[in-house]
Amino acid sequence: MRPTFRPLLLCLSLLSLPTLAATVSDLYQVRETVASQQPEERDAALQRAVDTLVLRLTGKPEAVKGSALAELRKDPQQIISQYGYEGDHLVVDFDAVSTDRSLRQAGLPLWGVNRPAILAWWLNETLDGGNIVGDGQAAAEPLREAAQHRGLPLRLPLADLSEQLVATKEALGAKDPGELRSASERYGADALLAVRASEADGKWQATWQLWLGEDREQGKAEGADQAALADAVLLAVSERLAPRFVVAPGASSAQTVEIIGADLSRYAELQRVLEPFGAQLQSVEADRLIYKVSASAEQLRTQLALLQLHEVSAAELAAETPAPTPAEPTAPVDANQAPVEPQAAPPAAESKVRGDVLYFRW
Image (cartoon, rainbow, N blue to C red; front, side, top):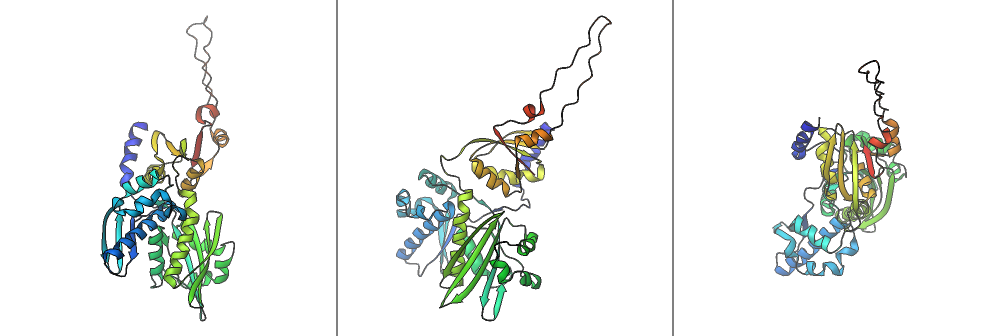
């Protein structure tokens, strides 16, 4: 198995596979609104674009104004590959390699392109009632723009009649998502976002809840209009999610990770999830992959949970490993020679399970 499995695995790195976690393809592209194409307006927009990108990559609002990035904000051209105008927007493409290097040199943590896919149940409440924002509606555009601005992979429901009946204001305001979670299963997202938005006193405001697994976050936001509100909500969500996924310089340690239950169809996604941790594949044995990575145990647990991997203990694996079948004694060469007893196999817990390894399985 070993001679043929590894080459086949390496051929899969270009495949796109249907898993929950999503890759943000435009993570290093920032769009900033401009009033004109004058040099002063352009320079101000470039600095705002740097601020947006830093917050998108670190999840730390204080990092934007920190002294470590003062020179970068003063001369953002050093990490920009190109920029141009599209309507009333300045579109800035940053170089990923030089940007990451600059932020790491500044001692900042980084959140990579692999991020949890978020399904947003967004209810706009008016005097006439409430309406869930659906994937094909015009009201979805501000949400999509806000998600791109904040570097989040956002999905929206179809918002058909059955979903409108399930996603009520009571359901979106409940601490337990209940039926809402069941209705979300068809969309295959990692996180569930429930938002109740309404207009009052000339501005929009919202309460929101976010579930990632069994963990729940909540908050409030407001904005001058629906677009500003969407941006405020998704900025808050980004700031809550980032600490779970960022990789801080110097905070990681060398880890050995064994993935159990792997097959060819899962390899490419596993490589993508582990890539921010400098993963190096050490060996392949049947359905087991062993990696060396640089990360904290908690970071690995959070990232691998996106692929529906579950951590198991060494004791659990030892209990599952069947005991070796005793071999028959070797027949004597002649009648005067004593039977040769076979060598005892090492205990399963010692031969298959090592205490310095983190184990995850599908």
